[in-house]
Image 1 (cartoon, rainbow, N blue to C red):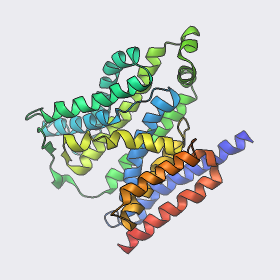
Image 2: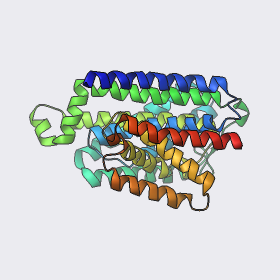
Image 3: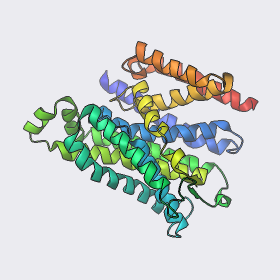
Image 4: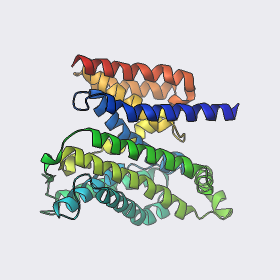
Length: 330
């Protein structure tokens, strides 16, 4: 039975991936709103998978994803402005992810060794605010509060952004999947369940915590890089916004924390709710979206994944269908 469920999940995942790959090839990427919707979902999926690895599997709740997202965007912008990298340069993206991961390792040594639970969460939240102030006061290097403007003439089509974001989301998913099937994954779960017991069994608790924290930061840095390329304007207020810290958390918890598919479901459903609410009830869409999250948490405390595969599909497809119809009317 378990093998059958795994096989069905794999088939569904492959078919869904093929759909995402083929869709932009069959439509005008500049006219289809759904292409932009999927692009944003892919970014959220990657960030949510990274946060899920830290909080869902390792048990270390972090509210600092916006710090690594913003840092990744600025690394991309600064290296491009300096002439070291170019437009949609994979080197810049890797440097952005690596820079975020390096910061996570440096900060993680202090925070993860000394702080736990709510105190660690507040510490990571403070990291994002510190970076926002630093980059606001960064002078010519960071552009100050105005930020850095990149040459928007490089933009030709949404297609390349779409496929890069899809690749980042797939990489995050596959990396977490492989990691959790390894001894490292077992160690992370052991740490989540009981740190002292894990340490007594020879697990280097701090090392594995830092590994999970740095991995989540790496994917956030990649997301910040591609989103920076997309906007061509990197500024502290937007890229160090708390939204980039809170949305991955909400999406993961909504979909099912500590599950592989939960962040994916949460990202698509919550983004769909936001978009549909913005279309139908723009005046009160923040209130409606917040109410939706509260109701899900009340009646599905384990997330959407607790419903089971068939029920999940029945609830997700109407969101995508509704967004598609609205984009066609526009």
